[in-house]
Length: 256
Image (cartoon, rainbow, N blue to C red):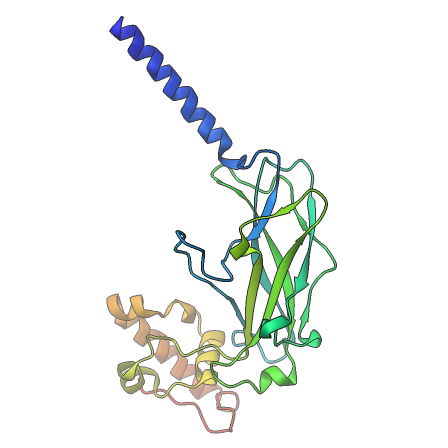
């Protein structure tokens, strides 16, 4: 009898386990709730998630690139969609939530959350949309660490509902230059790159293969790789004196 009870219990547990697996993508039953992946403000207690922005920059683009597409990840709960689900975005302008002007961004009249856009390991439905940001004279005048702000709010249509309150909006920060990397400290200044400037870093990233792999981990575990990259950069500087100049026309130099 004990053996039979054990077998029956195992079968029940197996059925429950499989049912839970099948329900991963069926939270909240037939209702569909949409929300951004990032929190635009800190989660209410007992949640511990912190607000995040989506940062975009022309720093990594060539000077003739006039627009970039900023990617925003959108999630949806509910049973798997049978058909694409439309929704819209609204620009939030009150309380300084948006400082970008209408000539600095473009949002579509309507977006679509695509049906069946999941893989075998997904725990919820996810899609990615794009918002276009434009390079303007105002952006070119931004200083290091300054940015333009664009806040967008999800507007559901039809039977679609809003999800978690803290994720119904997305905040984009658009800047001209990247913030100085944390790893570019006094030692890197003295022994490798010299003084940091946005243009020096930009030309390094644009013209040296593998430059984007230089980070704190490389400097800690394989500094010889970092030295090799900067030496390649020094060679490029010597071969392109007309291009390897700062914004004020002074030559770019490195200390390696």
